[in-house]
Length: 332
Image (cartoon, rainbow, N blue to C red; front, top):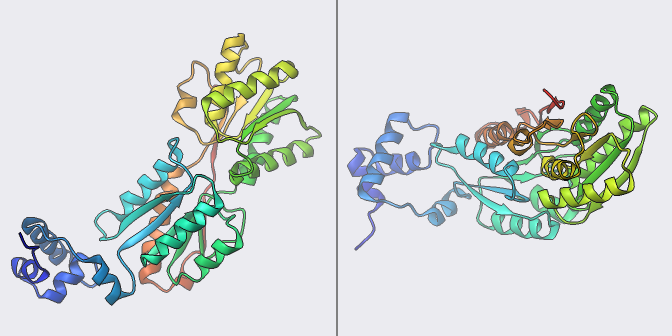
């Protein structure tokens, strides 16, 4: 069986071949009515476009490259969900790559994606090494970096200050009357945003005349099991801790299970605090403090900014879009 052609799509929709082509790309100068007619005709006759040929004529495809570090919890799937929701119906298609918090792997993914002539790139974080930054600067497409504001973006950044998030949580916990703090973290050499939160937290403690009494960290990435093991280890050394700050809610939930096993009252005896506002932290039999990050909204904003930057004068667009996490204390 032969493939249906663009000419057949145009004929079925009652438009010219050029209009059909532009409608399938979601061009803004094609009426919504024609876009709907052409797409309906293409679906009806089973037409599949040639994106390779399109990229040769337009200098880019309808792809938007998205690079995130992991899919092991709901954080980045929610970002991707926001991106996908905004792109739906625009003719643009997101393609995803996972770096696993590996800078070299991230660089290779970005280089490979750029070879496919994407219309834009959405990349996680602001801490890429110089070689990766050079790739992004030379890409000649809109570059949106998400989830972080602590650094200098290549072009656009959408996110929050993790340093400030750590500072604000420390101030809230000190105001709640906690004085003996411990820290439990994971993968800080790779998860640089978690490292920034820790640094901000420590700076705020210092301002209050306090410091971490004990710390337990591990090089592997976060998990419930790791949070539980590190909490057990820390409490064995420093049983008088009255507050534990974790690199994220996964780790804090693991710490909650460690406290449950030892019969430690949470939050009365020890207050646990994490980051992200994950459902798992809210599903515990007792509550923990956390910073709720607007993950889906950041994904939506990044996708809208990418679409705007493709069609508008990029210098006129807002370069930094800042979000502020909402803190909820235990019991709220």
